[in-house]
Amino acid sequence: MQNKYDVVIIGAGAAGLMCAHTAAARNKKVALLDHSNKLAEKIRISGGGRCNFTNINTSPSQYISNNPAFCISPLSRYTPNHFCELLDKYNITYHEKTLGQLFCDGKSEQIIDLLDFLCKQNNVVRKMGVKVEQIEQNSSGFCLITDTEIIQTEVLVIASGGLSIPYIGASGFGYAIAKQFKLNIVPTKPALVPLTLGVEQLESFANLSGTSFFSRTSIGRTSFTENSLITHRGLSGPAILQISSYWDKDMAITLDLLPTDDICYLLEMNRKSNKLLNNFLHQFFSEKFALSLCDLIGINKSISQLSNKEIAKIKQTIHGLTITPNGTLGYKKAEVTKGGVDTRELSSKTMAVKNNSNLFFIGEVVDVTGHLGGYNFQWAWASAVVCGNSI
Ligand SMILES: Cc1cc2nc3c(=O)[nH]c(=O)nc-3n(C[C@H](O)[C@H](O)[C@H](O)COP(=O)(O)OP(=O)(O)OC[C@H]3O[C@@H](n4cnc5c(N)ncnc54)[C@H](O)[C@@H]3O)c2cc1C
Image (cartoon, rainbow, N blue to C red; front, side, top):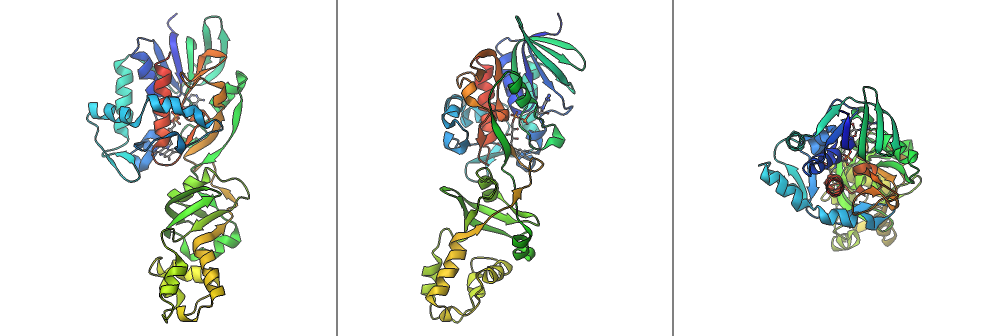
């Protein structure tokens, strides 16, 4: 039978491409299927077109999962160094932008082209624009009924990603297959996503849309000290995207707007100054932002006239501004999907389903979600290689 493979991988994104060439290099007959006609669109649009393909600081602590220890094994067996060695071998140059984040010097397409080349070199059969309509497990593996053909495979790998950015091909396919095989799914939600504010809060930031500021943004004990951005819908920027992965309905986030200074000490040092508070704050914030903060605090007088009670109020806003977002911009704008196939159902050595050893789940469809900064691609590469090497 011509349509018979050792391995069929559904989803030709980051994880699918990586797994396909890894398995094919081990003499497996591999087919890689995608319902989209375009290969790895998320790699192409990632990192502003330069793909933040890994982070040199990768460790399990940068991943969120209901089973946090699961990612330790795959991440330790395929590290950022391994991926860098692959890029070095094919002369793809890159640089560290900030906080260990590695980006291509050129365009993201270089990574897609490399993975595509490795698949072609290892004779992976690629089938794009294919709709998988039904999957049945039989004595010789899995039978896939697609809109164009029937395919038989011994091993099935689901690499169909999460729900974010549906217009470039994201779908709930992987979760549906997990359900079909009676696997538990950790509830999904948009993550690394801008947060929205209600009308009242938006009004207090009305003239600040486009303003960015540095802050320590926290929910409970989790915090990120990076830039944030005020938008016409609410809040965005790296610190907000990071904290959004920990945010749930009705939760407040706390912003420390001067995380490396102590506003009380700074005011005390200037106790005799006749500067108005907004002019004083302008040394740390833009003019507009400083004025809005004074509005928010409800005080704008000279430093020398501030009472201790007023200083405490200023401290409360500068070091502990609390905002309760009313939602997120959803999967349309989320970089990733939190939750997914419960890792307790999978082997961390192989990514196979524990009680169905020829069925594998890799990449974002699994309940392992990285922080912003190259960690999600590193998970895609690591889970894919571990899987490809075990098939
Ligand atoms: C705008 C944006 C920027 C990002 N930037 C970065 C970054 O710089 N660094 C980083 O680490 N992460 C980044 N990410 C996250 C990263 O892209 C993902 O975590 C990663 O692509 C997941 O890889 P994956 O292979 O599991 O899934 P995907 O790359 O999403 O691939 C899944 C594939 O499965 C296919 N598919 C879906 N449903 C079906 C179906 N029913 N049948 C057949 N095929 C199907 C899709 O078409 C797709 O090709 C970004 C995400 C977005 C949205």
